Image 1 (cartoon, rainbow, N blue to C red):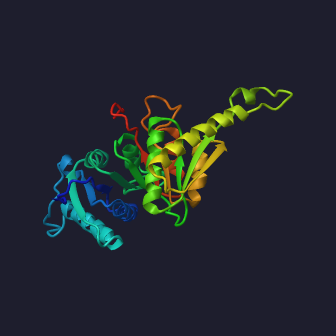
Image 2: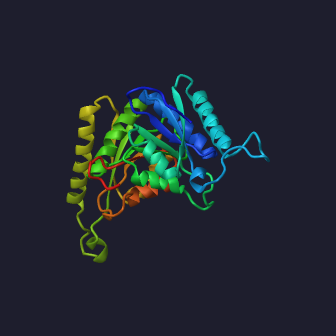
Image 3: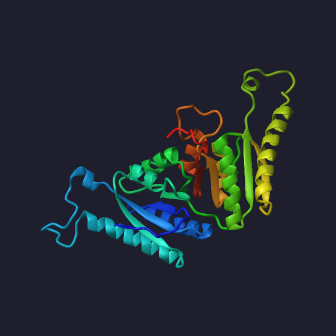
Length: 299
């Protein structure tokens, strides 16, 4: 099944698997598509043909079968999206393959990929499903993970660093604030140099120059965003602390937290940084992960 609208603008893509978390993601995706003026494309990964399993009706279940179940999942998701945004153009796709590769391929030219934080078949103790982790790590399209709740009236929270993905995340946060008519809280964290915790000098160390330098990075990032989005109401917050923990705390009152896929100081081989992982696993609101925009980004 492949019923795509014919248009030139990129879609918002949402992955579904029949779980309650996926339907919550569909509602979030529908709202995002409406805000962005995009069509919504609902994708279900159908892995059974690859495993040579009979997917059609059988003597035992003449009106059923795995393909019928997959089509039912898509139909339910489409109804959910239309109920959330009646004027939205919705298309459904049944694609053969494993979930993560299918969704990454479907979203390659999309405006946004939306996923639930947990799907069917996940281990109970996991805070975030493996498909969501893989998509956030490997997607070249921004990935919105449905978590917690969009706290109405709360700000858009953006983690600020001077990496390529960090700068792209700040821009995405300005756009989100503009689309939602929300305030933007731009947050940068810093920690004391390691030597300050090793020795106890007779006079407390002066962190003024370090703090001033960090404040300048934050101010520059905000100024660059305001040049392109002058109507956004922005507040800057400089915090001495751990970035992941700070953003998770702020998510308790936020509509959305926006982070870069990888920031400064991460290991080169990691496609998803420790801060973004921590926020994805623990945030109390949806999280937008913005990839490194460089064309030579590892995939």
